[in-house]
Amino acid sequence: MKTIAQIAAELQGYDPQALHADQVNAFLHQLVQPVAGTEEVGIFEALGRVLAQDVISPISVPPHDNSAMDGYAFAGSQLVPGQPLTLRSVGTALAGKAWTGTVNAGECVKIMTGAIMPAGLDTVVPQEFTTAQGDQITIAADVLRLGDNRRFKGEDLMEGGVALARGELLTPAALGLVASLGLKTVTVSRRLRVAYFSTGDEILSLGEPPREGAVYDSNRYTVFGLLTRLGVEVIDMGVVRDDPALLEAAFTEAAQRADAIITSGGVSVGEADHTRAMMKKLGDVAFWRIAMRPGRPMAVGRIAATGLQAKTAPSAQPASAGSYQNDINTSTGGAVLFGLPGNPVAVMVTFLAYVRPALLRMMGSTRTAPPLLRATSTEAIRKKPGRTEYQRGTVTTGPDGNLQVRTTGNQGSGVLSSMVQANGLIVLHHHQGNVAVGDAVDVMVFDGVI
Image (cartoon, rainbow, N blue to C red; front, top):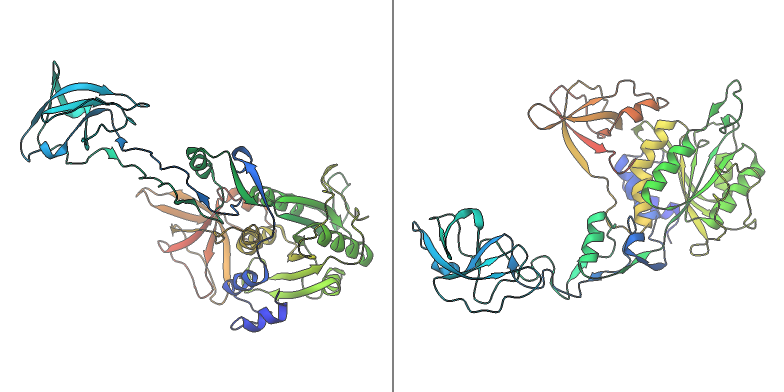
């Protein structure tokens, strides 16, 4: 396992006081590794899990050549360009059982969608392309070609082939694909455990009366939602006061029970609290100032699972009874740390841009980078080269049918309401400058993420 210093030495142009966005993800890719451990789960429990081994198809899908249409099956070699074709129907092939009769030249078989293609027949004409008189049908000239409307055996999946590869995140479509193979279970990576807590004396938990200079903790609830959407096992450790003993207890317990720890607050240079000092004391941690907006300060590293015995930290204020899991993390001897800024929007942006891809990698997923869409800006946006900006935006379909995007207005890092109004982040890259009306920009969409 590489140390923070070793990873930093290998990263070209590494400067912890001015990291580029792409350097952050490159660093995290080296820092985190997929967790060990697998389990076999039923299909109904597999949604959102990551495959730990390839799914090999035990059958071919479809298992036979079959019809893609309701119509008539015949030998397509009888088609002559520019001429209609008249055939006599000699039977009906239904889905679910093979039709075993003989079909000669000038004959056809009425066939239903999904029915096995009778021997020697390779083309299906849709019923609406024919005219019928008694047991004869006539196909108009030039309405189809040899082989049309036939599905081949194994066209979707061939027996013995890889149906789904290791590292695939199991989506609703993937569940259907597994079921189409007749498989009841899949082998997935064990569920990632992530502990999180907010830090600071100025943080109020829900139910506490307001007091001057204090704010209610919103970060715990947004992080809880982001982690739940990701499908990890969530360990809510509440609010931890700015006290060395309480912070040490919380960090140590979290490292004993989780694969990853997420905190918010206490990572800025010059802050009066003890969070930075405790991170340094208990682990191998780097403190960054990222060339981005919002969310410049961030801490990353590892926290050792040593010292205290696992127990409920005295500072913890869990959201509800039973939010703790009683298992100890023995797989890594510690946890990866993500120390996020304190401002609510900065927490969400840094999570989406950096933490979520890293957690997906820890889950074993091979698809970690968030997809970016291109949209046309409907307004001018001011942007200085030299930093990556993530502006909250609303993506819609324009009159021309193409995607367009506008900002939500005030982009302050404490304006959480703008994240509710937005359906994506406008990603203005490091070297990018001002955006004019009509310029194309990248957008990281929220759908299915938050």
